[in-house]
Amino acid sequence: MKRILQLGLMTAALTGCASDQQMLDNTQTVALNSALSRGRFELGCPEATGTVLSRQLIQPVRFGGIERAEYTIGIEGCGKRKTSIVVCPVDGSGCFTAEGIR
Image 1 (cartoon, rainbow, N blue to C red):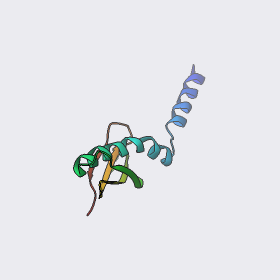
Image 2: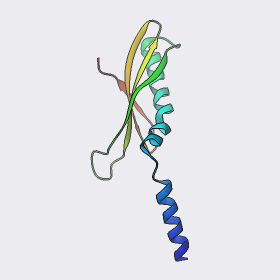
Image 3: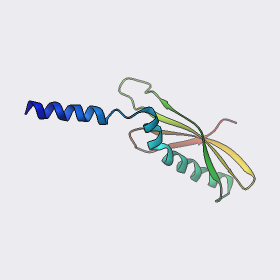
């Protein structure tokens, strides 16, 4: 029984150790789609496309907080361009899209 418990804890620890790149990859599609939805509406351009300009992990502000992925997304279409900042908790609970810096 003790051996099974040790094996279970070791498996949980190994599966919980995703690399920074893997965590960013896991939420990038959701972040891009979130920025595109907002960007297409704001630009009035359903054909607009998006490009990930940068991405990084943001450490929790306080102990026990949630680690977040931050993406800067460029959106372009119909002769217009804009940027959006998208923040996604790495726990998969959804993303928030804000206007980029002008």
